[in-house]
Image (cartoon, rainbow, N blue to C red; front, side):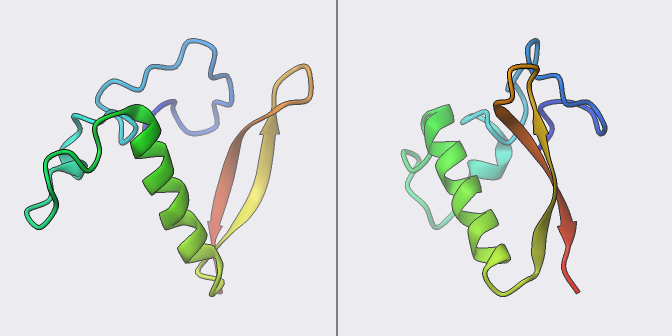
Length: 83
């Protein structure tokens, strides 16, 4: 989603500024939506998670790999296009 580069699972110094998680990103400027529909990073995360779930249900995308921190906490996933 633009938070870190591809192949980089370390999110400790990641910035959400100018990524799709940034509520000021142009992706959230939609003509038929109120300007207040995404105002926080939490809102952006919620809409992105929902979109991913909608694509996973019919098998359009799937989880290829779950990246974990050193303490075993899931921090990121790599998605793959379904067949």
